[in-house]
Length: 438
Image (cartoon, rainbow, N blue to C red; front, side, top):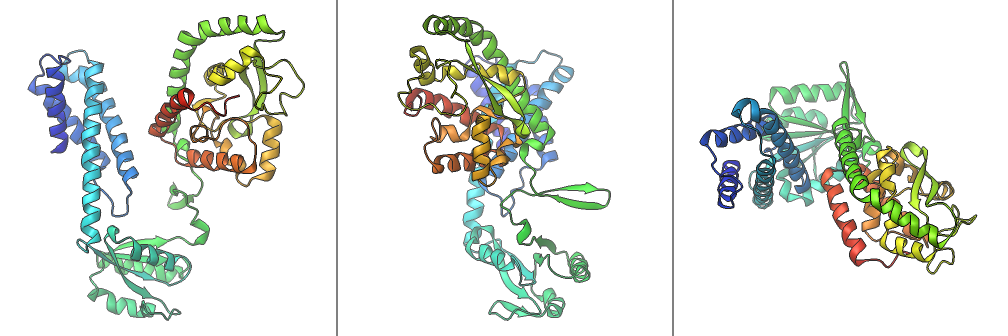
C-alpha cells in the first residue's frame, strides 16, 4: 500500500513540475507490478525481531536498486517507448524516501509494542555453558526483541533460571508453548539431532549458539560444499562479486570523468607552476602498499624540493622542504588529484583506507595488531578515518590506532551509501577543516 502511495505521489509531483507530461495508467500499473514483484522475491518487507534499523534500510536500498534495474531493462520491450532516465531516477528517490520512512516507523512501533510484553515468543536454552549466559543476558535486556526467556535445561547447571535436566526438557517442552529453542554448540551431536527432531515435530524454531571461538563481532556467512556447510568467519562485503563490481564500476566512471574534465587541464597548469618554482619532476612517485599488501607507485603533485627523506620523514607544520606552490597544493589537497590516475590503473579506489609509504607500513604492522587487515581492499584517495579527523601527520600512537580501527570498520561494513557519505564529508572537510593540511 505504501509503495503504491509513493508511486502516486511521485507521479503527481512530476506532472506538477512538468517532468512528466502525461502519465498513462498502464505505465503506473507496470511500475507497481515491478516493485511488488521485486519486493516479493527479495522479501525485504519481513522485519526480523532482532534486526537493527540499518539492516532494514540496507535491504530496502538493494530492493530499490533491483527495481530500477528491472524497470530500465523491461521498459522498452513492454511499453514500446524510450525510457526517460530523469523521471525514473526521480521516482527511485521519492520511492526510497517514502519507503524508508515507513519501514523505520514500522520498526520503531514494533519495538515499542514488543517492549511492553506484546507479541512475545517463548524461548529456552538447552545447555548452560559457553556463551549461553551471554545470550540470556541479551534477551533480558533487549525486551524490544519480543523474546521471553523461560530458562535453561542443563545436566550440570544449578541456578535460579535452570528448569531441570536435559531429559526433563522433552517432558516439559510441550506445555511451555515454545517458539524458539537455543542449543549450545558444545552439546553432544546425537543429543542435538534429537532436540532438532523434537522441534520439527512440534513446529518449534531451533537456533545454535556459537562458542566463544566464533563470537568475533563479525557478520558470519555460510558456504555449501555438497551436503556440508562451512562458516565463513572473516568474509567482508567486497568479497561479494556484485559489490566488488559495483564499487569498481563507480570508481572507473568517477575517475574517468575527473580525468577528462579536470586533470586534462589541471596537470599542465600545476606542472608549469611547479617547474617555475623549483627543479625536479612534476609528479612525486612514492612506493605504497595496496591491495593484499602489493606495492604500487602512488602519484602526487610534487610539493617539496627533491630530498632524500621523502619516504621516511613525514611532512610537519612549517616544513622547510615544502615549496610555496606545494604549500597551496597540500592545503587544498590538490596534490592528491593525480591519484585518480591510480584509480583508473586499478591500484586505488575513490574511497578506502589511505595507503602508507612502505617504510611506515613496515613500522606500523609490527606495532599494531590487525594492521594488515586494512589491505584486504584497495586503498582510497579518501577514507573514513580522514573524514573523522585523523588525517595528515601522525604524531602519536593514538592517531594511528584510531585510523586502523576506523579502517577496519570500513572494510567490514562497506556499503555504497557509506562511500557516498564519506565522499560528501570529504568535501565538507576540504572546505571547513584544514587544520591538519600542511
